[in-house]
Length: 376
Image (cartoon, rainbow, N blue to C red; front, side, top):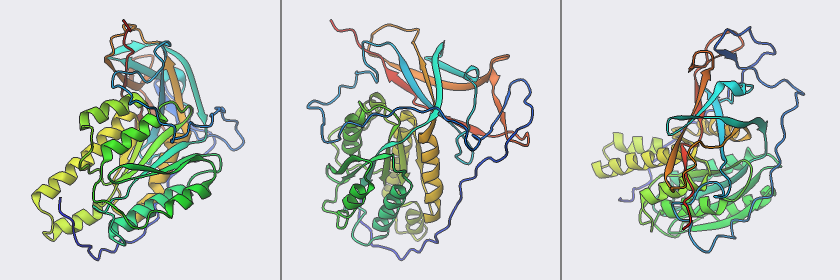
């Protein structure tokens, strides 16, 4: 992929607020319907203990094989973190346990435990910083740093954050800490990119494996073009490792407006256009299969809304656990599907706002896990 000259692209900074459902008491709900009511001021939320995360620097000596499960092989319990968001990205609280249904390989599962709570986040901020696109004072260089600094500003004092940058290889700039000064000091090192490689697969799997044993609300926030140049592992191997690590990925795709600007003026050839479409699809695949989400902002003003949606999805979640009916230890991948249903007729649950109007919603959860393999 050829390196482009920097265009004089000016993007207006717009502030897009995150809409919040308001009101204290909703209308009476009909059968098969639930009312989305925000938590009242002063209402107690369930607390979840979050242990201090393992340090990124303590990487396991060997890579995690693709067949390993996302839970300990001696415990046949599957945990699924679920976020239910409206079409504005707001978390929808207070959905009863009876409205959730989990299918494993199309077979219904009995939910053993169900909690909803708010907890601190443990986030690895993974930043593509390569001379392939982020050359000094280029448009993508500026967009990358704006997104990274902007996300750090949204973190709360109790949140843990680590900063990892990658080009040819990932580099841990700061380890997990609640001291945000460490993260900001790490960001100061991102000035001039060194290499013109962008090995996304190697970087994202390395971080996911290091985070696999961390307990509590955890995620990777990936700021990247989605392009991979010469990673040692393949796309398919990357998918398996990410699925097994059990760490949700939230990706912010770079250069969306810049690409359109160049494409409209005939500066982008068909190969480059195809490469970028593939890069976007890779980000969508990694995020969807890990229970996260991919964002592709065209304007700087979209960043506050994106950060708000990530925070909503991570801080507020439903935790569902079940004992899988399929106890065969065959090392195969089991597909998980989470649905919201009306138990009276098994039809899709209808959620309404305080005025009784239906709300379009989406369910974010990991799409499966790899079963343990019987040791001979």
